[in-house]
Image (cartoon, rainbow, N blue to C red; front, side, top):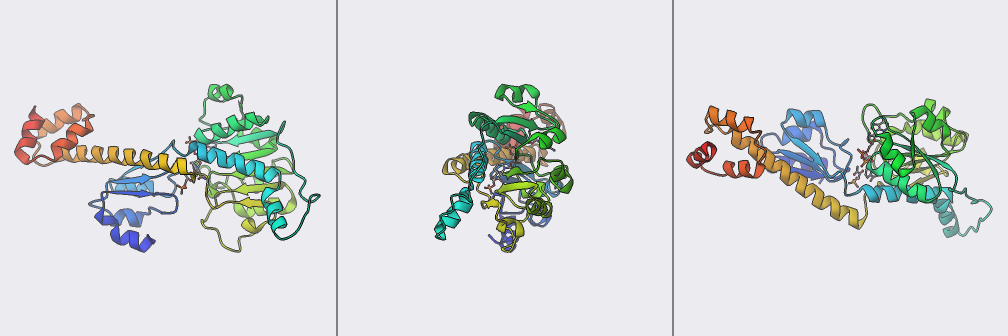
Length: 324
Ligand SMILES: NC(=O)C1=CN([C@@H]2O[C@H](COP(=O)(O)OP(=O)(O)OC[C@H]3O[C@@H](n4cnc5c(N)ncnc54)[C@H](O)[C@@H]3O)[C@@H](O)[C@H]2O)C=CC1
Ligand SMILES: O=C(O)C(=O)COP(=O)(O)O
């Protein structure tokens, strides 16, 4: 649907399920007021949903946090290996009739230091795989427990230490106000000259103009990017067209297996949230006497199925059910 079509139709639905391409703006949430109870993000990152506006509209936001983890990690590893061996550039050259073996000498991964920025579900799976490639793995994550990293053979370090020591840096933190453009002129300046960057997280964590400058100066040897500040990026984007940049169109979660898993995970999450919303409606229904409402709230109404069932009953039977 186009944004205009979504605005026109959203009020007809109790739940809306989106991927990253749909922006659930304040305008969309306002248009859905009165009917829309749940926004399901069929994937991990919820930076495309206006959470404040959703809260104000009384709309629950749920995601599918686990089903695409491996797909995203595998894509990160694919980009890492592809970039280190100039696969996309050599492929384009050979298809243009150029047999350039000397131009496309790569670098080896074994023994190199990989910094994982954001040691959550995807980051830790990338770490596991990188260990298998013989890389030395360090990680930065202000919230990850050190024993989780140790179990994988990775060392948790500060932001400064991670970016200063790494030969390769792979980004796996969410896009939040705190992570917006944390990779900028200043942080590129603190990295090793000739560092390699992989981004399967969100384009917005990098200042893209600063990355172009770092690529032009040779500070960054190459970058492999699955995500961009604006998607799709402009056709004449200097970053996308840069000869030392490998790009994919936000494909991290796009495997057959991941999308099947995400579909199931988000259906369950949205179903659960709708039952919860119905439970709240049942408890707050005008025919529920105040003392029964108080009792139900004391019980926290943890049995959503039961409460949802109540909401579908007529006034008097609802009252009797609440009493019992
Ligand atoms: N390219 C793609 O198709 C996909 C992209 N993603 C992106 O990857 C991100 C990570 O996904 P998951 O690992 O599943 O999420 P997660 O929530 O398991 O991990 C994110 C980690 O980042 C850490 N973090 C938060 N702020 C940080 C900071 N300032 N510096 C360093 N670490 C910080 C958190 O503590 C957490 O451990 C998602 O938010 C999403 O934006 C996820 C799946 C597919
Ligand atoms: O799960 C995520 O955070 C992703 O970035 C995947 O996005 P998509 O559902 O493929 O548009």
